[in-house]
Length: 428
Image 1 (cartoon, helix red, strand yellow):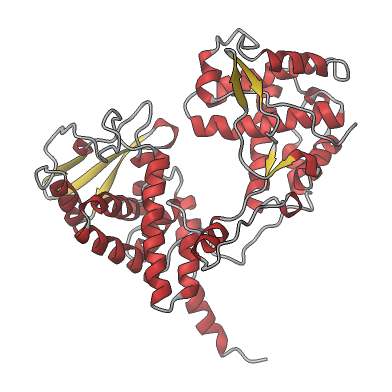
Image 2 (tube, rainbow, N blue to C red; image 1 turned 180 degrees about the vertical axis):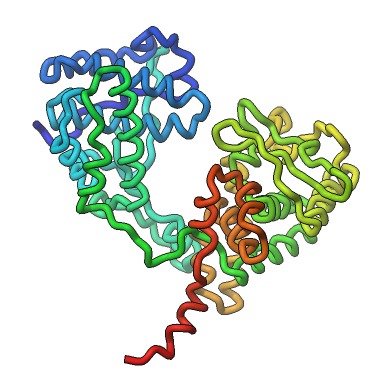
């Protein structure tokens, strides 16, 4: 089979996918997909059945979450394209050695299958969607830190990623195994595949490394967090538009929020009334993963940030019972709140501001870390700092973890600095 890339994307966006009737295999506005899948039956007669089963899998598994759909779509699509275009087999008859061959392919794909930028899958022409010829199943990107360092340089360089720089992260490889395992469990339940060998392949995979050399989560140090908080607070004192930045970072760190839990979504828009008081205690209602609601305890110290943000918006100092004001006032007035992408951009502006100040103050290594920081670090930072003083069960409940062992594994571990001190005096 040819190693060149002459395939196309198979599945459209989340909203377009679920707008199509479940019983209809191909959308009328993307005839290019139907034509491509039919062409695959020349070498893989079961290609249309493969496509139908994967489409049904995505429909069943991913309806509740666009992020889940995107994750499973990407892996399922890539797997189908490899099976048809390179391996020449239906996914129903894959055996252990076939899956091992796919994992080797994912770890080291042909350069022709790797793109250097994220592209739209389809473009519209005369009412029909055509496959974007620049789209690729794999993408190599510059790290966020490298991009920002280049922009800050006195002589900014137009650094572009090279397909030869592609490397699959261990976390991504683990996700490949996880996504494939869920897919094959679905196929086995439907009597399409004879078994699920993913766990066996994972166990013997030479490319998978268990890394216990680092801490379990990415988090900011106490000094980095202090710079982020104080520099954002100082900026908000000068410019009221930054009160929203300050409230976002304080909320995510203090209430252990995921960016999705702070954002406006199709099924949920966070409101000020989600904060409520019971006797002397304040709580915040969170709509989290798997469509589960939970209440998070609100520290007294956080109320100062809630007050100043509300006052900047012309509201009373603390929320009233059932208040319907959006938690984060939108940039565009017709929106009910802020989307996750916008929240991430505002948080990154706060990280960049702190990074610049740390550089000026001589903490260049700390400043570089902030360039690569994401919003999820704030959740980990808050939980890691509070783990020293909070009961495991209380922290786990506020984080929304289903199991205590998840919290224990991620946040209750030996501090590296303390371990290094205790190890210095060991004798040979």
